[in-house]
Length: 221
Image 1 (cartoon, rainbow, N blue to C red):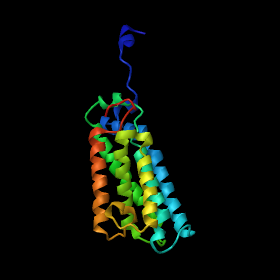
Image 2: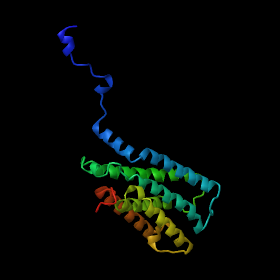
Image 3: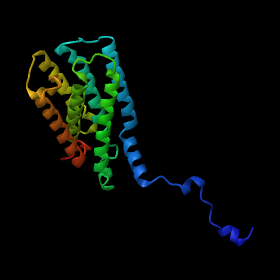
Image 4: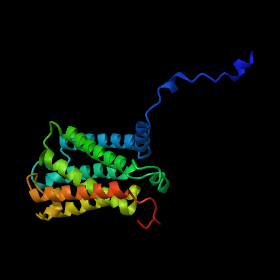
C-alpha cells in the first residue's frame, strides 16, 4: 500500500450522488411529524363509515333527521385534520425557517380536500339526503373551527371545538333552527349557510397559517 492509497478520499456511495432535494425532505418531515399518513388512513375510515351508515340505514333516509349521522362523521373527519396541527418540536420548529407557514397552509388545504374526497367516495351510490354539496360545506366549516381552536388549545385538543359545535348543531337540528350560523343543519342551497361555513374556514385557515397552533399551555399566544 502506497501513501497515495492512504490519502485517497473514499468513494461516495451511489445513492449519495442523487440526494433528495431539501424542499422535498422538509415537506416529508413536516407531514410525518404531523402524522399526516395516519390522518389520511383515518379519513379513509371515515369514508368507509359513512358508506356503511348509508348502506345499512343507521339513520333516517329522508327528512331533516337524515343529517344526524353524516354530520357526526363530517365533524369526525374535521377533528382528524385539526389534530394534525400538533407539532412535537414546539417553539424550536418556529425558528428554523420561513417555509413553515406555507407547509401549514398546504397541509391543511390538502387534508381538507382528501376528507371531502373520502366522504364523497363513501357516499357514492348511496342516498345521501342533502347531497355532496352540503357534505363539502360541513367539512370545510368544521375544519375551520378545528384550525382556529388549535391556536388556543394546541393541536392535540383542537378536536374539541368541531365536535362540540357538532353536538350543539344536533340540538339545533331537533329544534329546527334556521339561522345561517347553524350551517351544518341547513339545506345545500342556503346561501347564508355557505357564507358562514366559508368564512369560518377562511378565518381559521388564515390564523392557523400565520400564527400556528399553540405549542404549550404556558404560551401567551
